Length: 333
Ligand code: PBG
Image (tube, rainbow, N blue to C red; front, side, top):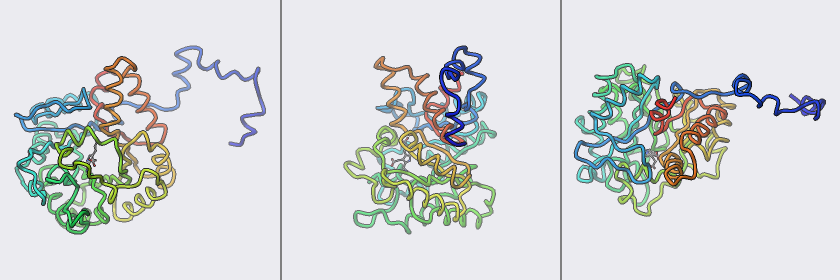
């Protein structure tokens, strides 16, 4: 398409408003759609006795395993293909070496088992990052003031086997260690799990939008003023995100993700146009919370604003969107 295609005929012959005049006509020329099948429902889970409230994200409380399973069934019935959950781990179970991540009876593992037992046809996308389990709130083992890459990889490789033995269908590592896809692929293949796929959080940015999630999993106070700039991508960089994606694909990633979502639509479309691989966006806790709090304050309609955000991901080229609002959205339709 050249500029000439747009400019040979002009107003008053051309009137773009003609196509906006009727609802049926607007529908007929609509370019993109979003529905439940495009969404992965993300949610934070808890032990039964833990407070469900997560500050900053009204509408998406922590769920007990019983609640999770009930709503997961509803999600499946509404056409949502998969779920990705994150555990609130109680403070006394967190330590410097994330040992709870290797507990076969952890909240995470019990939740995967419960989901697979009660809703076997709903996909379970499981994160192996260690931040819910560490007493410092970082995503791996510390060496001085840095997260140590290679010893963290060893721990991820051990914990991933618990996830797949419990029934996880897709493993989605979110901690941005170098080489994690290679190590996870080799570990899975070596243990006979060739068919478990890897969804890499390839371009995970050092973002301010994770705040409510960190409160949700109980790592906010532990992290204190600590940030994750030494392992997540600088928000100013796009070429670097493409390099991360190419590296992950070479290591064996089946699908890739950008996180957060809305501030990085250009990165999503560049990935899709460059690599033509299944590409996901994670509409994170702070993004969801912004919409919810504006709705509660009476300044914006959540349902309309949320639809607009979701369709922007589809327009940018996303195959799917991870979001805390998936179930609410599917209910509204
Ligand atoms: C960390 C992790 C993060 C999220 C999920 N897993 C980011 C972080 O705390 O650094 C964010 C999810 C969200 O904000 O919704 N591995």
